[in-house]
Length: 180
Image (cartoon, rainbow, N blue to C red; front, side, top):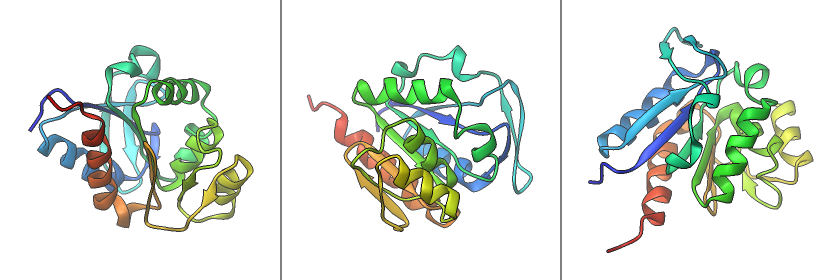
């Protein structure tokens, strides 16, 4: 197990989906990876099911290139707080340009689309008209699958896919680790 891998998880300050944060994070930590959680503001972020997450850094306080993967957590807070966040879009574009893994679950698949990262890519998202429209209007092929992988991009459709999503992110990060 490697302790050198680092994952950045991005959550909405309110309305993130609890298990879409906790399940993948637990899997990453079981690998011995460092996991940092950020949001659009420093706060005690609240999950849809009552989880509280202390957020001590925003995207403006981190260097995304210090991470092997960036994971955008979904939930009902994603459209209001993450979909159109310019700093998040720039962070994801930088990570993509540097060959790292980018992942989004639930409604946050739309963040990747709106950041311009899903052009001619296969992706999935929590199914509602606005989220599917965000994908298709930004050049993505909506799959409707629980988890979709297209190169270094991993998307999942919601909380029921959280475990498979986390495991898939781990597989994609490990695939990028140079062998000795």
